[in-house]
Amino acid sequence: MSAPKLAKLVLTSLALTLAACGGDEKNPSGPQGALRIVTTSLPPAYVGEAYLAQLRSEGGLRPHTFKLEGNLPRGLTFNNGAFTGTPQEKGSFEFTAFLEDASLSRNFQKFTLTVTDPPPPKVNLALPQSETAEPFLMTVRLEGRESRAFQAQFVFKDLKAALDTLKAADGLIYVARYNAEKGILDVDAAWITPRKDTEALRLSLTPAKPLRPLQQMAGNIKTAFYDKDGKRFAQADTFPRDPSQGQYDFETLLLIAQNWGKKAQPAENKQGEAPNTQPNPPANAQPAPPAEAKPGETQPAQPPQGQTGGEQGQNPAPKPEEPKTEGQTPAPAKPAEGQPAPAPAPQALPGDLNKDNVVDAKDLEALRASYAWKSVGAPAAPPKTNQPNPSNPPADKKETTPPPAEPKKEEAAPQQPPAPTPPPAPEQPPQDEEEENPGDPPGEDGGEGGSNP
Image (cartoon, rainbow, N blue to C red; front, side):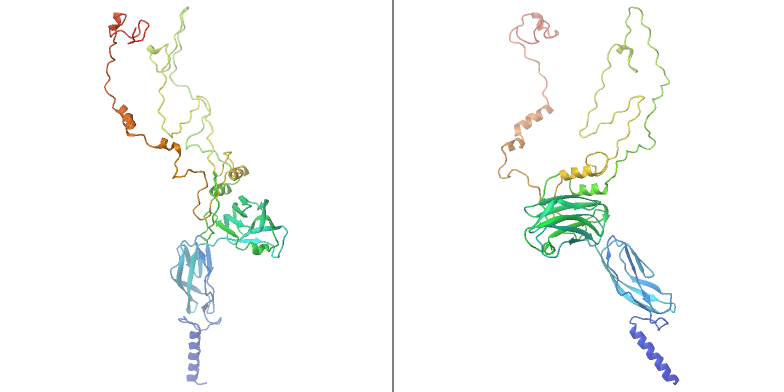
């Protein structure tokens, strides 16, 4: 083959190679084939969750080197083909990855990474698929993402639930309410430790007529899941509930689950402060012993320390009580001299409803006894109470109206008291003329001062 034909053949082969590797800047075929990026797309990322993705390449001469041009979401980094980190923002991010081999051949690929809120777990109901009129067991499984808690509502059409058969998985605490008339079962539940891909509940159902359970329950369950930190997933369902009054709610249930089995720890003493277990040392100055009483003479009582001698024989005046401020907690009493200081009280433990310094089944029973049911994800309707009609005010409503103007003036009068006036002189002269003397105290002669005989 002549040289011109050989050169033409080489150029033709090179052109075909460049055309097949669109985006190549310098990419001759190597022993492993054409240099290229095998990865064509990236898996989605979720805000707040760890992300890992690796670009794959082939062809050319090893080693391969990756470089990136473009913007990544905040929290992600790129290092020689590996995306790692935890995204902190949502959106679509476009960038270009460049690949280079040992012979300086290059290729590139454009990518778009989508970052969204993490999807919630999914509920999978294990139910009979064939038609039946006999009682059967419904199993509720949670699949997919890890969760700390969930709120659910089951609507049973032509199905009757036996609430006494409701059984929760180990590590799941719950509150349940069943309205047999409406066929609605409400469940609020929380895991002691976050779980995923596990069974949650079991319940026995009885059909009112022959039906297909799996088909009957389709679309009749709504759930709202909460992540490991107790934050509600953005894509959770919203559904109304009949509200009820109670002292505790779903937030309290979360606190009990997060602190289940914990015991309250004693409060730590302040730095440098230790319980006083030794009596106070005696003062340097010893008080003089009392003088011996002479025969037939009564020894006067010794005055308290710091009291003058002229006050001997008299009880010390009581100290005036300090004014108490409304809402102010009185200071704890100091221990007596020589007595050990009391142990510090335990710190308050979240979820300890009965104040026994441990979170356990007793607190769960207290929560169930006074639980406030609320709508999920939507503004809760106020509980039904016997409130008066605004158009018909009660009869005693006048008691709450402000007083008239005159009583206000009378109430303000004590702020500016008038000057005192002397008592009026008696109309009749007293029996004893000595009583006319203003210097004598009233009632010296057995009568009341200023009274008529």
